[in-house]
Length: 626
Image (cartoon, rainbow, N blue to C red; front, top):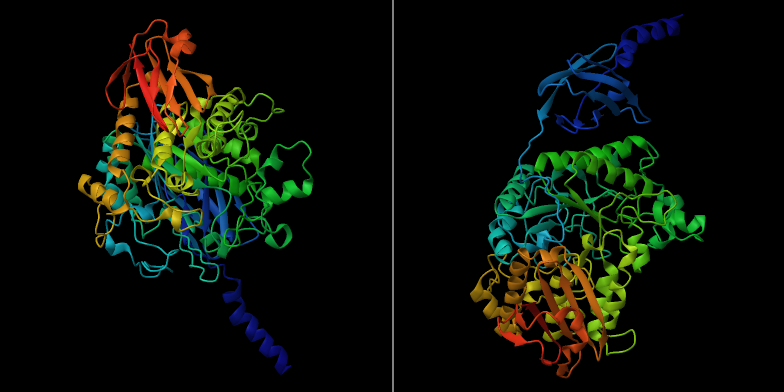
C-alpha cells in the first residue's frame, strides 16, 4: 500500500513536468526572404529543442502555410510557405504551439531590389581575377583572432590561416581594376570554423568546408562587409563571382553536429571516400560500384558528403543560393566540385537559379580528362539521352593542360603548340565554347610560372594566348607578378607581397613590382604591364569577345590564328620554338588579301604584312590589321 502511494505521488507531481512540451527556437534559415520570385514556395528550416513537436499557424494576407514537416530529429521542423504575388513586404508573425506553450516568431519579407548593377552575369567580354581571401591582403588585423572560433592566425605554420580578409580586398580593388580586370571571383567566404589538422598538415583557410552557409566567416568580416565589397566592385565597373559548394560541408557544420535525418549525408562507413573518377558519370560501361563511389563517397574525411536526394536538403541548398544572390547582388557563381553531387540535383539547381535570374551566369568546376567529358556538362549537350545540365559555363581544364604541355615540349605532329590547335579543334563538342572559363593556373594548380620551368618567354606566350583566344579568361592572384609555387597546398597559395604590414615589398605598387623584379631577377614590371595592357585592350574589342576564331595548322611550332568579325580582324602569331622564324604570310591570304598593315598591340609598331614577318624565339605578335 505504501509503495502504491509513492507511485501515485510521483505520477501527480512529476508527470506534468515530464509531459509538458517545452521547446525553443535557436535559428530559422533563411532569416528573411523576399516577395516577387517566380517560384513562390519558401522553405523555412526551424531549429531548436523539440521544435519538431509543435504546430504552426500563420495569419498573413498573401502568405499561406503549405505544410509543416517533422523529421527524425525533433529539433528540426521544415515549414513550407507560399509567398504569393499578393504578399506584401514587411513583418509578419509565425506562431509555434505545443500543448503547454506558445511562441511567436517575427519573420520579414523584403521587396526585391532592381538595381542595374546587380546580377549582371559574366561572359567572354570579361577578365576574371581569382582571389583567395585568406592569402591576398590583411586589411583588418582586429579580426585575426575571434573569441570562440577554433583557429586564429599563425604566420609560421604554412597550412594555417594568415589573416587575409574582405577589408584587404576592398582596400585593393583599385589595383584589381587598374590591372584591367572586369570581374572578381572569391574563393568561399562562408564560415569555416574547422580545426587545423596537424597530423596531416591541412588547414581549412581555403573555405571549402563550410560550417554555416548563411554567414561570412568572421575572420574575413561580416555579411554586411561582403555586400559592401560587391556594391563597391560594381560601382567601379567590376562584377563579383561567388564560390559555392553543394557536394559537401565541414564536419563542424552546425547541422552535421545535430543532423536532421540519418540520410542527410551519405554514410562514410558504407561508401568510404570518393574515387575522384567523375568520368564514371557519362561512361556507358561504368559499374554501379564505381558510380556509387564517385557520387556518394566523401571528398575527404573532414567533409561529409551531402545527400541531395533528400528533398528537404535539396530545397535548403537551392534556397541558400537564391538568398545569397538576392541579398548580396552578386553577378555569378562558380560551383565547386560540380560533377560530384547527383547530376539531376545540379541540373535542377542551375535551372532554378537561371529561372529567377536570366542574366546571371554559373561556371561549374568540371575537372575532367578531355574535351568530350568536359563538354558533356554544358547545357544542351547534344548526345545526352534526355539529360540537360542547364549549366552555362564550364572550366576548361583540357585547354589548360594543352597550354602547359604545349609550351614545355618540342614541335611534333601532335606536340608543342599543335596540342593547343588540336584541343581547340574539338570545340564542336561544346554547346558554346566562348562561355568556357580558361586559365593557366588557379588555386588548385601549380603556379604557371613554375609549370613553365620559370621561363619568362614561355610565361608571356601563355598570357598572350589566354587573353586573345576564345573563352572567358581568368587570372589567379599573383600570376601578373609571376608568382611561383608547386602543386602542394601552401606553395600555390602564397601571400601576395604587400598585403601584410610586415612585408618589405609591396607589389600592389609600381615601385614594389620593380623591387620584386630586381630581387628575383625576373621581368615582373614587364609581365604586369603585358597583363594590364592586353586586359585593357580587349575590353573594347568585340572581335575578341565574340568574333570568330580561325586557326592554321602549326608549322615549325609557330601557331597562327585570327579573331574576326564583320568590322575587324586581329592576327595572333605564337612562336613556341627556340629560334627566330621568318613567317611567309602568303599562307594566310584568305584573311590578309585586303590588308596591308599590322599594328602590334603590345608595342604599337606597324608591320607590312604583305612581306615575310620576323618573329623572335618564344615570342608573340598581336596585329590589328589595317
